[in-house]
Structure formats: structure tokens, C-alpha cells
Image (cartoon, rainbow, N blue to C red; front, side, top):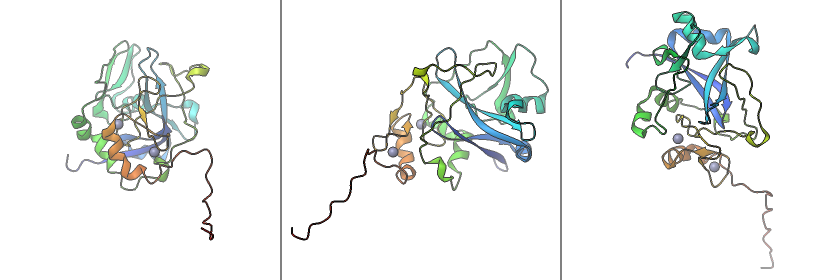
Length: 232
Ligand SMILES: [Zn+2]
Ligand SMILES: [Zn+2]
């Protein structure tokens, strides 16, 4: 892997955390003209949701955008014939290195391990790249009160959101982990702040040294310090 240079693009917040996309070195120049953001796409078959990178030319506006994997495939490999779709080989839907993309027939159902083993995940390029982001921006760690979530159908249309489903599948809060809930409230929540969710104790423990700086006990009222009575 020596000499490999990658781009890591901040996609902003989705599913309860700041997301990043991985790009090949030759695509890093895109950031001069394109904006990137995270989009949550809910699986219509009820298998939770996935986070994708979405991109649009800054001068043309958000409406003229497309998913980054489709965009990159067109940029380097040509168009996507109808009846086909671009998917991510390793199941990490923000890992948009060209070698991680492939074309499959539209009706292909990709099955990834539910929770990839820790060993595999730690060896993934995405995991390493995100973990090595030396100084993570502050907003990576502050839980958001307003989780930015949009639901899109496979055709990119906004899906009507039922009231009961307004929330929201969370992704594991540990930055390099891409495990995402398949059912609402599947993951366990930090008992202290009740804001961030983890796929398991492994990630929660790894994230704690950082999260503890931002984790605040949930309290309805901040109790006033009892003044020490001098009479006591
Ligand atoms: Zn995790
Ligand atoms: Zn917490």
C-alpha cells in the first residue's frame, strides 16, 4: 500500500455522525468544482438504510447532482447502461475508489455480512483512513440534535416519510465503523448522554477516549451547586 494517496472528503452529518467518503488521488481535484454531502437511502425492502456520497457541481446546484459512485463510474468508465447499477464491492457505500466499484444488473441483491468481523473491518482501507484523521473536526463528536436524514427511493426520488418513521437509522458512532442499524433503535445508546449509538462494546470502548470529552450526562435541569453553608 506504499505510496497510495487517497482523498477523504467530509460529507457532513448523516445518521448521527459526520461521514467521510474515500476517493482515488486522481479524483481529489473534484473538490474544486463539486460539493459533496451524505445521503441516507432507506432500503425499500426493510433492510435498514445505507449512507451514500452525493455530489453536485457547485455552479449548477444540488438538484443537478447524482450519487458519487455513479458520477465516478461515468467519469472513468463511461455511462451506466439501463438495467445496470454501480455498487460497492466491499459493502462500504462511501468507499468510492474506482477499484471498489463495479457494475451489476439492477436486480442484483448484494448480501454483505451483517456485522463484518472486527479483523476485516480494521484492515479495510476506509477504517484506517478515517481512524488516522489526525484532528477530527469538533462537530464529529458533538451529537446533533437535528439529525439530517433524507430518504430516497432507488430512483432518487424523495420518499414520503411516515410520522412514526421520522427517525432514523443510526450508524455506529465510532468514526471508522460503518455498521448501520437495520431496525430503528437496534444499537445500544450511550447510557450517559443518550445521544450516540454503537454497534457493540468494541466500538464504544474504542470511541470512549474521544467521546468522553463530549459526552454529557443527560439532565433535564442543571442542578445548582448546593452552596456550602458556613453554619455546617
Ligand atoms: Zn461500530
Ligand atoms: Zn455519551
